[in-house]
Amino acid sequence: MSALQSRLQAELTSARKAQDKAATLLLGTTLSEVKNRAIELRRDLVDDDVIDVIRRGIKRRRESIEMYEKGGRPELAAKEGAEVGMLERFLPAPVSPDEIRIAVRAAIAAGATNVGAVMGKVMPQFKGKAEGNVINAIVREELAGK
Image 1 (cartoon, rainbow, N blue to C red):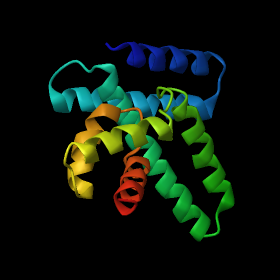
Image 2 (image 1 turned 180 degrees about the vertical axis):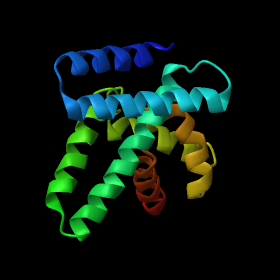
Image 3 (image 1 turned 120 degrees about the horizontal axis):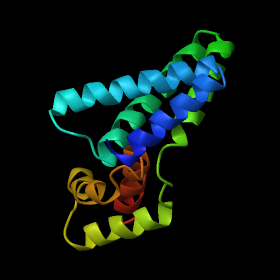
Image 4 (image 1 turned 60 degrees about the vertical axis):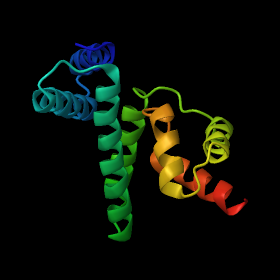
């Protein structure tokens, strides 16, 4: 069991003891998704795998927020927003846009001339530390500024 998985389990136990139904449901669901991912990969997970599961959960909830806001359901959007906040506590500190920009410029200097090539070189460096859409925006800015 990875360190992050253990932390999730400890938080779930605390939420159960505090009778926090929302946190218990969210953490229980997340741990279930983590276990399903371990079964899918047929190996024990490392922290990066658990972070991927958490990021997917956050992405799903952000999409739900957008739909609820369009549908005029602010109370459901707020609930999803609170869940995003709870899950984000388990992610590593995000890297600064300046760090991403330096890596993007290095990739461009190394000969990557289109968005796909630059993303291919930069994404592995920031796996689990930055969202793809943030990196993509910086790549497009840098390529347009050439």
